[in-house]
Length: 544
Image (cartoon, rainbow, N blue to C red; front, side):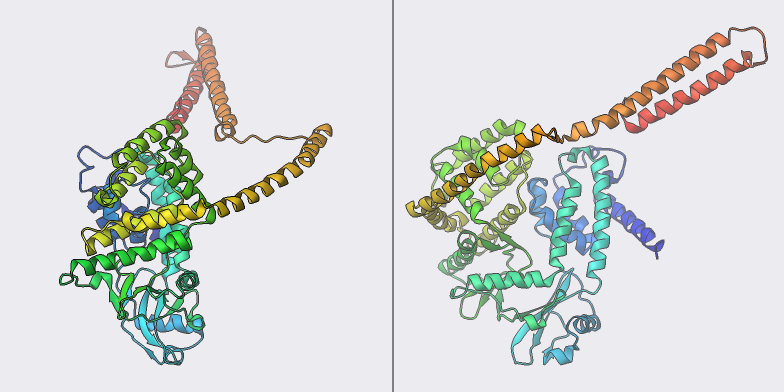
C-alpha cells in the first residue's frame, strides 16, 4: 500500500498538470516564471473556472475559497469563480445505508419511517434526502460520502504540492502565500466535514431569530445528528433561484429583495453572527411568505470589539477624517505593506471623495464593491477571514437583490442599521460604561506596574536577565555566512592548488603526463574538480 499511494498521487499530479496545460496554465508547471506573451488574455477567469470544474469537487471548493479572496485574486477571476457550483453525481443508496448504520447504530428502516432513496441535492461532501422520523416529523437528512475525508485529505496534499510548484516557478505571484491559502482551505473544508458544527450554527441562528416571524430556521434533531449525518426540520417552500418573478409587480419584487437583505443586516449588525452564503439556493420563500434558511456550513462572527472598531471607522468616514482610515483598517486586523501606507491613504481618499455627497440611491453598490475589491488586490491588503466572509455575503446579497429587483441598492438597507449601531455605540450610557471599564483596566495595569518593575530589576541584579530578538533575516545570517566562508575557503584552495601546480610544473626532471610533470598534473586535476564543484554549488543556489 505504501508504494501504491505515492504512485497514485504522482498520477493525479500529472493529471492536474495536463488539465492546467489544456486550459492555458501549463506555465505554472514549467521552468519559467511568467506566462508566455498573449497567454494572459481577458478569458483567464472562465478558463480557470473550467479547469477547477474539470479537476473535480475538491478543486471546485478551492475555487470557491479563492472567490472570497480579492486580496490575492484579481476581480475578473473572483467574479468567474463565484459561478462554480458544487453539484456532483449522487453516490449509491447502499452507501447511504452503510453510513446511517455506522453513525446511528440503526438501519435506515429502523431509524426512519420513510426515507427517499433519490437525493434532492448532491455535493462533493454529502447529499440530502427527504425522510420522516418515527414521531411523524418531516425532515431532511444530509449524509456524508463514505470516502469524503480520505479523498479530501489526499487532494489537500496534492494542493500543497501544486502550491509549492507555483511558489517556486511563478514569480508573478510572489506576493501570494500559496501555502497559507491551502492551509486556510484545509481548515475550512475540514470544518465542513463536521456536520455537528453545522448543526451548532443552525441552532445559533434559530435561537437568534426566535420570535421573529420574518425568518424561519429549521430545528436540529440531535438524536439523528452526528459528525457525518445532519437531520433538520424540513421547510416547504421555493428556492429564490427557482422563483418565476416575471409576472410579479415591481413592488412585490422590491419587497422580497429588501426583506431578504434586511434579514442579513439583522444578523450582521444586531446578532454579530451571520450566514456566510446567501446563495439563492440557500433561501426559500415559504408558503406564508416568510423566508427559510438552509445550509449553515459557512458562518461569520463579529465580536463586540469588531463592532466598536467598525463604529470608529463609520465615524471617521462620516466626519471626513479620511487620513485616519488606514489606522482604522489596521485596528480591524487588515494588514498592508507599511511602506505603502501613504499610497493606501491616497487611494482611499480618491475612492471616498468619488462618492462623497452623492445620494445613496444614486450609488451603484455593485460598482463600489468592485472598486473596493480592485483596491484590495492592487494594494495587497490582507483581510481577516471573518471580513472575507462578510465581503462575500454582502456582494452576493447585492447581486441576488439586483436579479430580483433591478433598482435594488444594498446600501439603502444597511444605512438604518449602521445609524442605529452608531447611536447605540456612542450613547452617553454606553460611553460611560466603556470609560468605566477602561479606567478599571488601566488601574489594574498601574497597580501591577511596580511589581513588574521590581521583578525585572531583581532579575537583572542576579545577572539572569535575558533578551531574545527574533528576526527572520538575522536568523538565517549565520547559515548564509557559513556558506559564504566555505566558498571562500574552497576558492582559496583552488587558487593555491593552481599556483602550486604551476610552480611544480616548471621542474624539468621526473615523470610527465602529456608534457606536464606528474605532481603538477594531479594538482591541476584536483584544483579543476574543486573549481567545478564550487561553480556548480553557486549555480544551484542561484546566488554568487
